[in-house]
Length: 130
Length: 126
Figure (cartoon, each protein chain N blue to C red):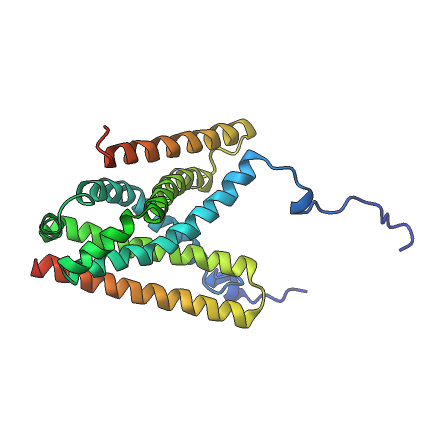
């Protein structure tokens, strides 16, 4: 037992791990997933207000139009596109494709660019600009 | 020494006792959500700025209300499988994780029922 080397490197912990694109995207996938799950009660509440009549529906739309409401909607728009695009990336991994380091970084960058563009397009459309 | 009985291997369910059904159903719902999410954003763009009456008549179309129902239900199903994995990953106290899981699953079921009733009420009544 005495010849065990106790100076061997320890498993790297998150706090000493330098940030890499791949890990940030992975954390974002979970984050956006959780944030989207928080959005579902809001969607269901919106549907509930819709069935309860014009007055309540007007209230729901008024709250969603507040700056905080718009910010949340923007967050959910980006989250749905990000989680969708990165989810497709995950599905490719599930069939064993896209594991080369260069592919990982290229597909990761593509996910960021495409989800931002889709979010922009959606909001420009919402404001009637395109 | 081998502790596994041949029956365990034959069933192929592994230590989680459910095989890969959780993983597999998460992937199936993910694939279903690809077109559903795109349809959902596209539809919300169409009806969000519309007046109340137009939204009601939008839900009056069986295709719209059916797809909206599918979107909410599949999203809830997929989301609940995801949150379950997050809870199982980070919460190591059995009593806490069990409580959270029950809350998430029960809450999802409640939201599913409320959305079904609300959408059907608008779709049929409107």
